[in-house]
Image (cartoon, rainbow, N blue to C red; front, side, top):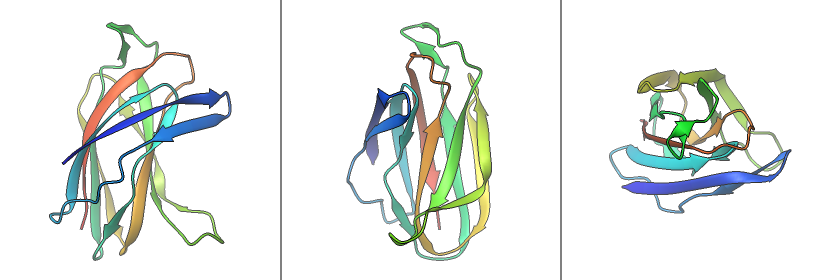
Amino acid sequence: MRIRLLAGILSAMTVMVLFGAQQASADGSFAWDATIKYGLSSRHWNTSSYGDQVIVAYSDCKDSGQSAGITYYTIRLYQAQDSSTNDKLIGSPVNYACGKKLQYTWKGTVKGEYYFMIRKADNGKYIYVTGSVTYP
């Protein structure tokens, strides 16, 4: 299943997010792609058990064939909480280098609802990122 994600800036402090509302496939994985100016939040997915969550991502960090002036972008994994508490950051933010297909595994996550956020320098340039998520 492919999901098209698109994000940009509403203001210097606000991240605009547009993402698909499709449900994750039964096998615990989905592919995604995104064009981002500053950052985005992915769709949410539910894990059925304790286990590892893996995010693979790639970007050449170019805007219309030209360098976007960055060397990395950052991915953070969150566990959604109820509306009375902030969502929980899982582990530390992970930097993904431009021009390399990288994989990071968040080990031993508990059953729950998750999503990831991607951020890059807010320099007015867009980058295209593609990847996949695998979860228990």
